[in-house]
Amino acid sequence: MRIKIAGGCGEHGRNCFYIEGVSCTFLVDCGLMAGEEGGGYPDLTEKEIQKIDYIFLTHSHADHTGAIPWAEENGFDGVVVATKETLNQLPFQMKHQMSLDEFVLGEYPLKVQYGRSGHCVGSVWYQFECEEKTLFFSGDYVEENFVHEIDLIRDKNADLAVVDCAYGYDQTAFRKYVSLLIKKLRNMKTKELTFLLPVPKYGRGLELYYILKKKFPKWTFSADAHFIKQFLEFQNSDWKKEGFK
Image (cartoon, rainbow, N blue to C red):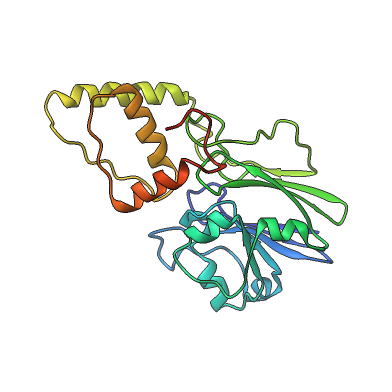
């Protein structure tokens, strides 16, 4: 079995891990490095791309998915596998796709376990069993959050584990940053009547809304149609922590 880091280590973007075995070759994520000269695509050759049977996505953000059209243009004719929520969030069409639920129920040489990673709706971690090896990929795993449910990974064992640590050098605690944000906004509110807060299409916006609504219950909040639709769908989903409303 050969494992190649095709992007995402030591950089923010183009997350991509290539696993080539005797019975199956697959990717975990196929991301794009936004703004990089030459496209910021994963470090994969056409020969490697054409060998890939499956691309497993941890979630829909472009730094994990944005290079899929490029992979198809360069010979990828396999199946993109992800949660149905992640597949629905992608802004492009794929030649072949399958939900994780379908894949797990199928008869494949590659066995997969997965759980909610706490990052956004549809985001997961993976544990693969292939050719007597166990491989673990955390994706953007987030234990400290208020909104998105998580399936903890603390009991997992693997021959190889790839764990996200994009902010691993930052020793500031999550709740410290929350306190700093609240303090900053409270001070600014004495001068400003309205705040405009741009957020990703999926994930962090719901967390931010929850924090501000709890701290400033008398504030009026407005959002675009996409955010409101996402918020309403989230209320009755399996991705929501108990108590969010």
